Amino acid sequence: MNYQPTPQRAGASGVSIAIGLLEMRFDLVPTGRPRKSEDTGLKMTCPADHDHPVRVEQRYICPDNPDHGPFLASETARARLMPDETLAPIDPDKVAEAKAGGKETGRLDISVFPTAQVSSKVLPSGKTFRLRPAKTRTKVSDRDVEMYAVWRDLIDQRSDITLMGRLLLRGTPGLYRLGVWGGQIVLEEIAHPDDLAERDSIEVDVADSTAAKFAQFVDSHVEEWEPGTLSFDVASAIDAVAGQSPEGEAQTYTAASSTLDLDALLDRVMAA
View (cartoon, one colour):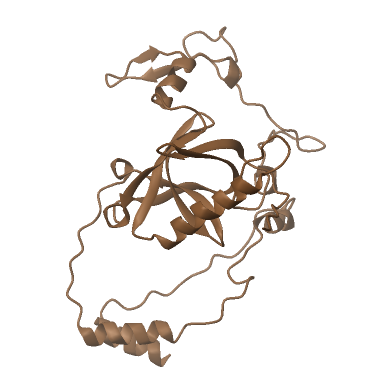
């Protein structure tokens, strides 16, 4: 048995995931590399003339009485905007309870559904974590590593079923499903069908010859994937322009002619 976790810190520890009476505790590790918001974020500074940029602080004022405030965000009260446009005072603690919906924080009770009933009705919507067996005191037990492998192999081999459920994580509820990526169990947040906008109705009859021609065109663009393909270091790009004056030339693009029929358009781009 070989288990070697990476040094990356967990985003949430000891999350319980249960199917019926079978329960296991996992640590949730972000799938992305750690990146501070400071790497790409810009700070608001005073627009007046200073020897060096000075950061500004956000304050809130009361429009009915200028003697009230200014307040920091943490000092303000909270209210909910009602349908009649009035504000109803509300206790933030009550909001947290309402969001929980009776769910226990850090516990995911799994429901199992046929994938055919789920896949066409949901979409990925946000956070993705990889799961690792949670430590018991100071280490991960061999039994938990073995059980992890049992969970992983079942999820990987049974594409006909979807394991999903609601999880309250750091006070925010979400719908999640389990999957496997790179030999590890992943937990992917998905949008509930009630939260998705109505889809467009698109019904078009495409000739088999046109479909085959388009497939040929796409196949002609297949290339080997390299790790650096489509990568872009945003932080470095921002660092390169920090302190520079706004400048640059606008780029223009030529759209394909809308007067050509689809077959003629494909012939033109394939001949280019």
